[in-house]
Image 1 (cartoon, rainbow, N blue to C red):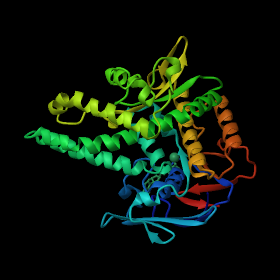
Image 2: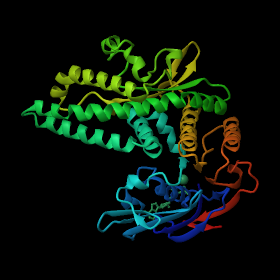
Image 3: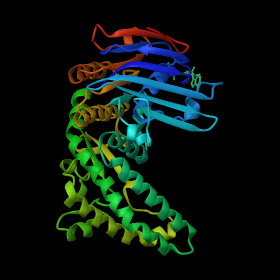
Image 4: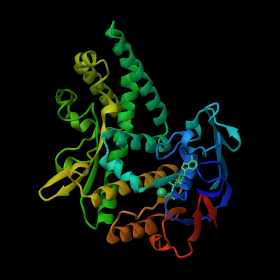
Length: 403
Ligand SMILES: Nc1ncnc2c1ncn2[C@@H]1O[C@H](COP(=O)(O)OP(=O)(O)O)[C@@H](O)[C@H]1O
Ligand SMILES: [Mg+2]
């Protein structure tokens, strides 16, 4: 997909503007606090109808306005227009595709096929497991049919089960949700694990390419299937608990095969059922569900002399930024593979905190891998770095873009 036109009305400080993007992309250059990130935020808003920075819609509305609109015209196999509007007075958000209002936002997700990378993404690596689950949830919601539905059903069952546990009077009532929880939870677990297993290898090569040789790895650690917790469960089902969904272990076990297909999912469901039974006493005590994919993590490791260590705790600043960028590149590759379209890369000051060697290797990677549109921001011309000499340059000042 290629973003051709972008219409902005009162999104952050961007005022009322219509921009026509070159098919190859553009480098947007401007000082701090002029609106560079806001522009990428507006574009990515059309991908999943919320701020990639986690801002609330009210915060995206220009100061002194109640309503914002963003509309994008995309060119691809078939042209498509995606629009979103938010009215703060009624707290109402509307999303439309080709002028037809989407019944659910998820029905309109992922029309751009865009990936966004920003320096703050280092918290994908440095942050807690919730941040990485969120990453997986976004990537899979946009790229894997059935994921959104499974995740929503899982969350709903989880919330209801927890509510029943909290009332305390009759905790047994909570168990009524176990069936739904297990069904959708197993689905969520398997789709995430499958994704991690499929992309472990590319992740490792991206890390190695950017860092110039670091050996990094990615693996999904599923609460229902990890070695310790599920040991007996695994033995019963004729394998190790860890093998059920692929789990981080010593060295080479990283990125082990994921359970796929119905058989794999049935195994995971069985393991989850057992985990729920085991953890029932602690669920009652803590008044919440303590087992399930809401406790999973994506484990990122790097090889240090003699051992493999989590990047989160032991990686250098450069290694963390590298792993974060590699995750985003994997996300872009997922779009390319799953949707069969060349992803639009939104790179927000992408080279800001990478050393020269890493920056150059990233540039080489992007040039080599991605033939699609690139919208990048940089504080000055010398930070643009991407070789494409013909890449247009726009200036931005006080939210106003001069093409
Ligand atoms: N809701 C809003 N309405 C108007 N201006 C806003 C809003 N939110 C942020 N801004 C302004 O946007 C600017 C920051 O934009 P940003 O895109 O983050 O800058 P940068 O160019 O450094 O990436 C600040 O000047 C801030 O005041
Ligand atoms: Mg910025």
